[in-house]
Image 1 (cartoon, one colour):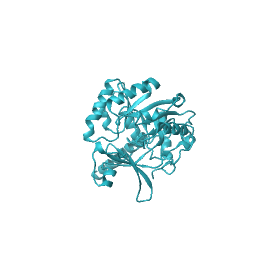
Image 2 (cartoon, rainbow, N blue to C red):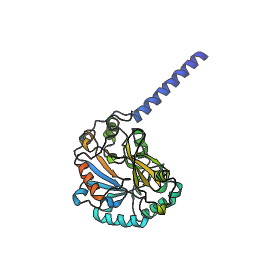
Image 3 (cartoon, rainbow, N blue to C red):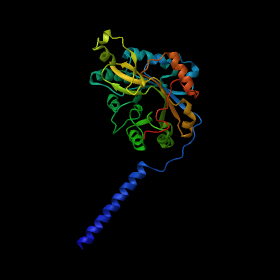
Image 4 (cartoon, rainbow, N blue to C red):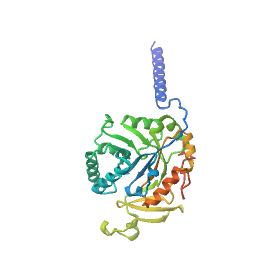
Length: 318
């Protein structure tokens, strides 16, 4: 009797375990929806200097759903003035404010001051690049108030599978940017299921890495002090023979490829995969406004951008 009871319990446990696995797989890996080919894209652009879009003409704003502005670079008063000026051109409802992906303790007070001032001024559309954004915006991810804040996430809040996308939606996120490190094969099911809520970056100076130490200070043997430093960027050759650009960013070093990540020649593939929302980024690198306009027009027209590369788009992250 004892043996029969033990056998029966084992079978019941196995059946219960199998059912839990089945339910989990059904939730995380449902039947894949068929992609609906996109006929018209919804465009957005992200900048960390508002004057990057100073050369834009009315035709450049046509079909643009929103401009995303990184709030960390400019002084709060200057930033507010620039945002007000731009609101008069494209409308406040088309501007989203972006929080940084990385904030050190000594920067936190400044970020919180900016956020508080902008929230008080009525800015309600925000982009999170790190989970710290919920704290800065006074949001509880377990009980998100989507009426108060229209929240999206940048690619550094990784969404490379369905579970991550669903988790962000549960935290009040209305739209998320997919990783530029991902490949088309993995993007397809996400685009098919989430449609316009999944944003694909089609132009970006993706950082190769970010260092807390200053490359220039290391080169000259010491820091001259922020007030006496004129370092902005320098070209370097990596140990693999690749030419890269090192940029100063608040006394950090950001290393970029000399050419941008760019999918402008792959717009047809993205449309076939069901991509609806596309974005071009102009951050970190110091662009002339005329250059931003020229690249923006080329990207939207599906033309190649000089030095552009497709990263893992074809081979994926395997």
